[in-house]
Structures are given as structure tokens and as C-alpha cells.
Length: 546
Image 1: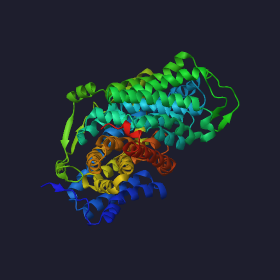
Image 2: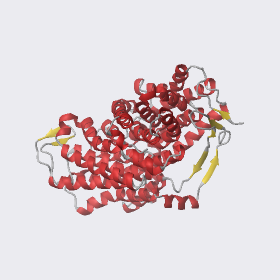
Image 3: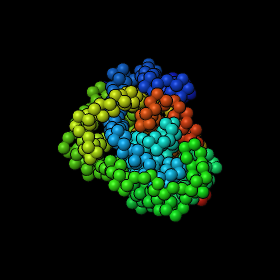
Image 4: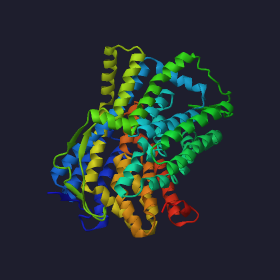
């Protein structure tokens, strides 16, 4: 018999909310304050979530354990599969010296570290977000930045900060498409509304990113290039999302931004070149790396192959074709359709499906794996050498995979137990301030689940219901869930573990969390202010899709 979620087990909103938040407090406290290893922090957070769900929220033990197992499986495939194969490709190129050539070849565009950061973490990362999402952009850009000489904390934290504005349209628009499905709102209306919120931050993020790296003075010195990067991302983001839909927003915007910055830097360069230890007075060196064109092309070839295959793997037609060849769907016993979400989170009681899809062929990580194998062949690896590198990679990321599995187990437990909904309903009680706090609800959802898509699944319907009760646009608040959620991407434990693995800095996740937390909360608050203005203040109200 299905179990109905309970959102106020203590008949006291404050007490129920405090207990619902306890797993998050344990996770973030052990990670950021006690500085525990990420896998131990995740396991303790998971245990706390299970105890709270079973003992206080009266979730049957079998359902709680099944939800944790379901989350762990999802953590390994598709997310862990992406991380493993990106690091495999990185290790292949590093062992052959090709990554060193790639690193130094970037001086042909600019040897200013601030501008390298914008090109790679912001623009190039946005391409991977648009094509694949699910941790791919952070894994790739953090690995490249560490190879360019950025410190592990900088490479990790800055990749996370950069991977914000593109997230709502990631993986060919899946978060917005999913939001439309769960909220019952029109996908084009939602795409248009998100496209009237995030472009402001697409302009801001390059400035914010460089400010976090080089300080205000260092940021001001390169403001023209930052403006070009942001504007040439924001305008296509607005146009494609409003006049086409959510599918190709990040792909078009990232390519426009990369092309515009590269062309701009052919004519302009800063007076002072910023190195990893500050700036010097030397004029910028053009193509001074000393490598031939063939060497540079060979070094970039694995990453070009990766980009092409990730894009192909992200196409719905390709996914459908590969799934037609091989896909296994496993309904999770004791969980599938055995948990009922009930009003006021949804308009009518609704069973929560729990079907694990083993789609190994269409998984983005498989496209990355094939790119790595092709690259290994082109770089002259033997079969034995390739296997040895892959085994070393598995050993290197084993604790990261454990952490990702535990993090997703925690996220799925909070979802199926209703802990997330308890937190959401508390946010919904903020009345006329709801546009601000509802945006932070999306931020919290991504911080909890590691996914803007998952946050939209959790809170998309609640946002619509709350907006209708308050008397504001349901399109506005549903979109705010996704737009606010993107700023939570940098503090979700899954993304932090991906970054620490890519930079070979596993065990320092607490340092990364402390580095990015202020940026995440500040940017989420700015999104909340914008949504509040769009709800009530002219002329911002003219932007709202009714």
C-alpha cells in the first residue's frame, strides 16, 4: 500500500523544518566546518537523512533504504561515469605531454590568466553545459585550468562560479523542459521567462569571476574583454530562449562568446599581463609557446573529439537511437509508485515513480569514453598501456565515486521522504516576499540535489501553486526556481567532488565549499531581488510572461 508523505510530523512548522534541515546541516557542517573527508561527510549526512525520515517523518524503512539505493545507483551512472572518463582522457593527454602543449598553446590567444579563465571556465564550460551538463563542464574546465597552472582551489572554485548562468539551459534545455512537464506550464513561456532573467547574470558572471580571482583592480584592467564575453553570451541567450526555445541556448551563446572574445583579443590586450602570482609590465606575447601548428593541433585534437562527441551524444535523436539499441529499465522494488506526494505540494495526490534506467550507450560518459579511446589510439597508446591508465584512473577517483554515490543517495532520500517539501512549504509562507524566497528555494533545491533539473522536479509544481495563491505570475516563479537554482550549482556537494577530483585535490572539499559559498548566496540573492522587481516593480513587470 502506498505511503503518503508527511510534511509536518510535529504539528509545528518550525520544529518540522528544523528536523527536515538536519541532514543538510550535518553534511555542510562536517564538510565545511569540521573539514571531514567528503565521503565521510556524505555518509554521515545520508545516515542523518535516513534516521530523520524513518523515525520522525514515519517513512517505512524499506522505502527509505530503497530511495538511498536508487540515488546511489544514479550517482554512479550517469554522473560518476562522466567524471571517471573525463579524468581518463585528461590522464591520457597528460602522460603523453599533449596537455602541456595545449596549456602553453593558449598563450597564442592570450597569456593573461584572467582572460584564459573567462575563455575556458565561462565560455568553453558553457558549451559543455549546453551539450551535456551533469558535471561535465566542471570536470573538463577544472582539469584544463589546473594544467594551465591555476592552483587547485582556484581551478575548482572558479570553475564552479563560472558554471552558473548556463545551467538552466544545460543538456539541451532539459531543466526547462522538465520544469514545463512537472508544472503544466508552456515550455516556450518558461524558456522566454528564464531568458529574461539569466542574461543579466550572463553579463555579470565574467566580471564576478575575474573579481574573485584577481580582485577589483585586476578585474577593471580587463573590463572591455569581460564585457564582450558577457554581452555576446547574454544577447544570444535572450534571443534563442525567447524566439526558438530552450534546446540550443547554451550551444549558440557559448560559441558566440568564444568567437567574440577571440576576435576581440586579436585587436586588444590589457596593458598589464596578469600571471598566477599577480601582474607584470611585459607586453603580451603572441604565439610565443614555441610549438608548431601540427603540435598544437595534435594537442587540441582529443578535446575537439570530446566536444564533438559530447554534442552528438546530447542530441535527442541520437539518444533515442542508442536507447533503442540497449536500455534496461528497472522499477525499484518497494519504492516505484509507493510514495505519494500530497497537497499542498501538488494539486492532487501523485505517486512518485522510481525506475532506474541503465542506458549505458546513450549516457554522456560513454561518449566521453569513446573520445578517450579514439584519442588514445591517435596518441599511440597500446591496448595494454590504455588499460593501465584506465586502472590508475579508477584507483584515483574511487573515493570520489563513493562520495558522489552517497551524495545522490542523500538527495534521493530527502526527495522521497518529503524532507525537501517541508523546507519548500516553509519558504512558501513568506507572503509578498515569496518572489525573493521562492528564488532561494530553487537555490536550495540545487544545493540539495546537485541538479537544476531535479530541483525543478521537486519544487516546480509548488512554485506554481504558491504563485497562484499569492496572485503573481506562475511562469515567473516557476522560472525563478530554475534561475535561482543555477547559483546553487556551485555549492552542491556533487559538483564540489567533481571539481576536487578533476584538480587532484580530493579531501579538500571543505576548502572549496568555503571558497564558493559567499559567491553562491550573494548571486542567488541578486536573482531573488530581480525576481521580486519583476513581480511588483515597474518597468521590470513588463518582462514577465503572463
